Image 1 (cartoon, rainbow, N blue to C red):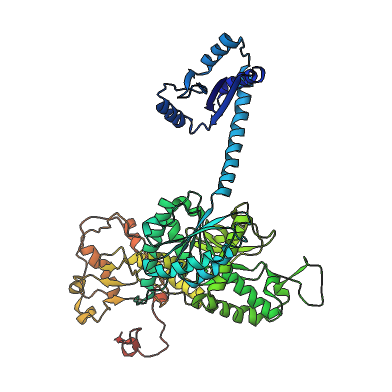
Image 2 (tube, rainbow, N blue to C red; image 1 turned 45 degrees about the vertical axis):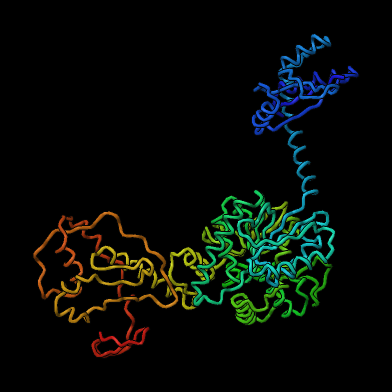
Length: 623
């Protein structure tokens, strides 16, 4: 019996012609057998090279044909390529091929499509036999205890998908993890293949298909909020590097908890860029709290409330949007079938509750973590994973923390909770929703803390100043005037501006010796430290001054009796050596800046020298 092996690229026309000839011989000759092997064009060369090295053959084209000596054993006997196989068929069997070029190409394309489909089927079968590897960080927390029974029930990944859970935490919690692993095995879940414990960082996330990031226990030795924010950066860098190195290429990372969820998500995206599109933050916990609050107000069950949108910082300044919210099966004068719904805002007649009590309650829960225990956190994580794998309910809006791409006017580069839908294993932002635009005041309130958290974590900002609600319009006008003033001051050589605190402006040491005596008596004429920025508001890093140095021609017009308002410009002119035209000098004049905006208003008829003002530090300064 003659057995031939035919191997080639799936899209090779000559492989298609040799395949047709081999099928004809096998059909008409009882002792002729053919075994076919196709490889994807991307891996063909490497596969052929390994085959030739293994059998000491020399061949470089597609197809390759050899004969298996079944009755003798040993390695196969190389026949060659298409031409050699055609000659063999003509000499031994008197058969040849007359396939046209067009037919060869058509069959080659069909072979490629069939090969790809076959490979996908193999992957599905492999997934059924190979369990889904799920890693849980900070597994010693209470959230993990409540999460494991939901994951092993089959509701999240499917009733036919087996899972393998690995509990990951530091070495001090190993005993706790072993007890938890033992309890998990005692569940006797038919979908649970294995449970393992890992306390070595270098082994973390090996072949992980799902990574669940939980809250780490707060370090009691940390003395400030800034220290805790900065401590998230090295941890997320470690996790990101390990995910890049050890996890599966299609890993899905979900970040849950109640502390700096958005920050941890964006840092993981920064340090695991290859899977950044598969990293999300859970917002269903806050959404559930909002639905429960509305349900209590309408005296119905929370499951009847749908389409509540959570915007912004999941664990901080967020905004629960009820403009699209609907209530089903509400007991009122109007009743309908199960799919009938009514807008929530049309049924809540207490605007004071909507605008104040509802907002204040949710803000307290998200900022303090109250009523956000292990059960709610575990359920929100499991539900988000379920939607991600199997799709969200049709027509329903779901809130999810994802990387902003500029949708809805949200600044790019931050993780922001926004409305999405899940389908076909992916999530899609619902940018086609109408009448959900956010006001500038609400957007500023939510983005302020998110941007500051990132800057503090990366060491680009020294202090975190939470957003303080107030008259935003006055603050914005004040901010614009101060920016123009600072830009003007940076052009002069008498000022030093702290890059970490742009509102900390000091005069250079030599400047005091150059001021006229009557304007700088013992340094009291102008304060050496000027910080007009209102407490709770920050400019952030300013743009550096222009690279071109601004110089002036030396003049002798300065006199000691010159007014104090001209001291800064005149001193700068006297200490420089190049010439500027009158048009260029106009750049230093700021006709559009009203410096009165930067001076506190004093309701007193007394001269300024008699008015005593107390600054933010409790000191008294005479003016």
